[in-house]
Length: 244
Ligand SMILES: *[C@@H]1O[C@H](CO)[C@@H](O)[C@H](O)[C@H]1NC(C)=O
Ligand SMILES: *[C@@H]1O[C@H](CO)[C@@H](O)[C@H](O)[C@H]1NC(C)=O
Ligand SMILES: *[C@@H]1O[C@H](CO)[C@@H](O)[C@H](O)[C@H]1NC(C)=O
Image (cartoon, rainbow, N blue to C red; front, side):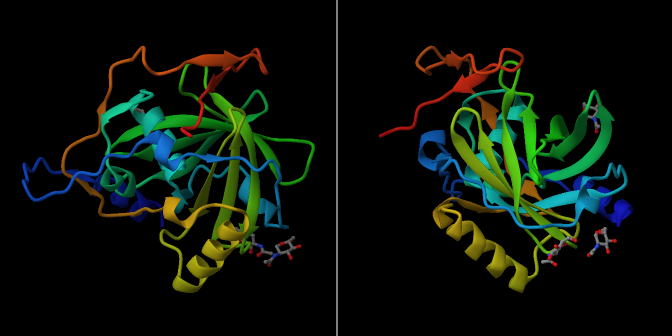
């Protein structure tokens, strides 16, 4: 399992192909963002998943587009992209591995986009199945609450992420790579019941990722509104307002 998962990652190829036939549809944050409903619906799940297991690689075969976008922001350390397509998000080949516990946080490395990585932190709250999480970018990072909305207790967990800035996303984390057809249908139905829009589902490859040209970060722009809300002094939150 572990050696084959590692070779999945090394299979990522960046092909520089100047193709006049490739239709480029750029992904804009304001078109894919979803807003937290405020409620979490959680199910019992297998708590073995919370143990530190540096051997296991977890894959992300399905997520919301905003989750993929935010991962890309963290990988490329940029808030906006001059060039980022749906193809990039589908070919990120994201995997997560647990690194260690430090100061009460569980540190997890997210790998993808052809050898990039960053570390997310999660910590259990006093409420069962509810976690506090932290992505490192932008600035001191984005924090929020994550809950496990659905699990089969064996091969997948569905994480519902609500960022403190009000944006919502989800990620399906598996030990097996792609979800089986039956699990995929169950997970999709559950996510739609939670209010996620199917048009914003990101069906991501977990192996054999190919990207023609790398995403291109945009230089910091003054037209982009940046406000900080002081809900948490340790981790100020990036505020972002949705297009009407
Ligand atoms: C998962 O495990 C929990 C606790 O062990 C149990 O309560 C729950 O019914 C299980 N769920 C499924 C889908 O097997
Ligand atoms: C919980 O997950 C572990 C690791 O995947 C597995 O060995 C164990 O059988 C699971 N427990 C249940 C009740 O499914
Ligand atoms: C993350 O990427 C950096 C730069 O490529 C590398 O030095 C580091 O070992 C990677 N970290 C992990 C945990 O894979």
